Image 1: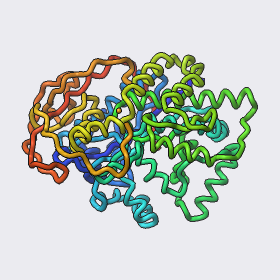
Image 2: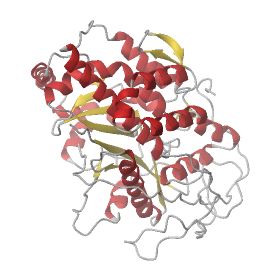
Image 3: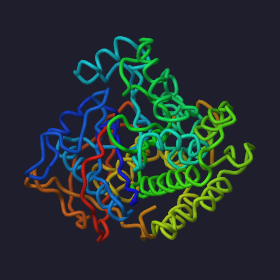
Image 4: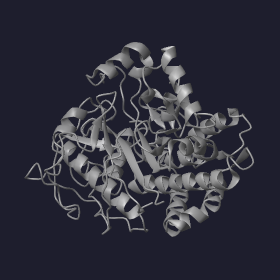
Length: 466
């Protein structure tokens, strides 16, 4: 069986002038360039807050195909946002957010969630990345959750990109995880003997009235309700496409490995103890790649690089089976050398300010080098970093690429035609910027150019929508 993968990515919609989260997801979706035969929202979706857009990839067998698909989707969203003075940021949280400024998407289900969960729903201004992996059947998907579950916290650590919340440093690498875990059905799922047992548990939760439908099962890993896949849900949205591809490759290997163990051992024995796994998820959210994680092999604290490399050694056979070993090894070592996105964001903010951090998120999401997104090439003057909420922790592409020079770009003349991603010298000027997050008045910035996507092969397939 060829095991395919698909990805859902969520993006914050950002006003590039102020750097703040804005409720304009519908504006971005309404102007996304699409193939002629696509529907009005084919491959894209709304989410609970009006500040988030979601993209759904096709189904792929190769990492190159997935990389090309995700990069192309990001460019389309960015082109649509740019024409309206907006940007899209793939990160667990947007650094500059104000509660009460983002209403829910006007759909019946979302209004019900807002009415029922109140402040919890109001504060879901977060974005994640979900990965779907083929499984032979639903029974196997449910049983594989138990075997794969202990290795999800290292994947969260690789994705961690949300240290800031409401303009302050939380002290966490993934504050999104802390916000998300307040839902009554979030966290590790536990272990089930098969699909029938799992479905009974879900039915009981729905009948209890705590959740309204099976779509509100927000476990870190779950069998899809309408696809024959196992779904990873624990990760932050990732600024760099390469990180998403790395996590997708590792999760596919985890699922393949879990299924193989089920076949050879006739099942897995669960000791019924899952409290350490929730603690391991907390540790990954706190530390990212810059501190310690809980090693699933020993259930003891160990440096994050040691735990991640241990996961690679465990998964080497399935990674080699799919031709992913060399790519994953390179991307992993690159991720460990760069540090988590949370670490890199903190470094920028410490050197400049929160607006500079937002600029870097926007640039990384579109595939450009870090740097400002507004005005001319001069860097903005240094401004104070945000107030800390705790101590700060210490910073993929499918082959190593040299950093590109910063550039600027113009709006495409034809709204349906994207910019040439290789043209990094087109200029856009946006004028002075006034923002409550900047001290010292308006200052110019620049727009980083976008990296050209490598020549890769993309497999077709249905969108991996949830």
